[in-house]
Length: 469
Image (cartoon, rainbow, N blue to C red):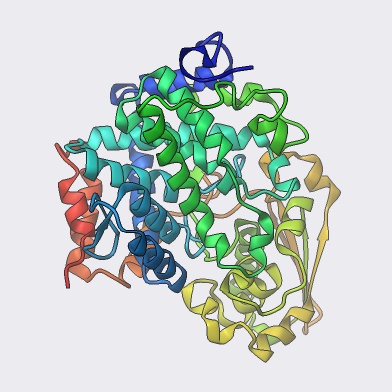
């Protein structure tokens, strides 16, 4: 039985947990390819837009109120204001804001939103630890992506099947890795940070059916990961083989099947950061392919909502189970995670962004009636293609003109296989950040992110996020 101190592990270098920790501890900016740095900048800007808008939402404000009541040192900024809380509290609030409206970045194979976690952690620790350069900031975020996304990939959809939210339970490793890199933890300390974080991993998928707690999943994962790294920095120990432990470890508890080789496959050669995608709609990613296909068919054939008699969706079992459950108006999250609601508002309003998920619309009789035109079934051929193609979708429209219009895609729109262009990303940032920043403020924030790796300190970025009344 392992105990504390130096006896916590017989071998501090063996196993996937140790290898991943050593990679995080040794990662340097000079090893990052230019494409990875460029992608990280794009992720940072997209995430900050999500955070700024998310800071205005009622669930984020409730989390901030609770954090404020707890008190503590004023160490790190709450994005979208001028107030500062302790690092763990700021991370909790900012990451909740980033994930607060289903718009943060997504990785298909990992089934994760990593940006709202990594960026929140890096911001808070950079301000508190300071001075931190832009290159250190970028490196820490990449460390979080590369380590945490591999944990998600290793679960390969099995985590979801057990009823856990991958972004929540795997997100603790994104946060721990990002924090470990910024705090300068060595390989052994980073391994303990992983061992502590993994023991705090939590998040249930039933939250998607209407509860505000879905918004908290990223924030809690980020806070737990930061706490784990801060504890490890002081010598607190964790489960040193947390990922590969055969009983009571992360994967042996969270999954039925897993390929532990995915944890370290391609480290330093294959960059999972490059596989991150951006969301064009304010819904669960499993809704996105059908939304894009419906939008394209309606535009191509000049259809309005009443021209369509029926919408048949064929997708994977994962997508059906995730988003095709009977819709009942019970909160914004429920609407955002439901394909019947999302397709109905796309048909009726030709959009699925912020305005379509306003509280006032959730029980709209016209939307509820339109859902009856939609059917969702599983295509076994899509399932057979494996986890990398779990967003494969086909839709068939039956029109009042007697047409049968069919279109399919193998990829989620916004993913690297079907990317958003620069103009689409820019418009998304403008729309979201515009809820908090004026045009000048948005331009200052853009300028700080564009020159991120050239910044000697993060001060210009932090100042651009600080809104003084």
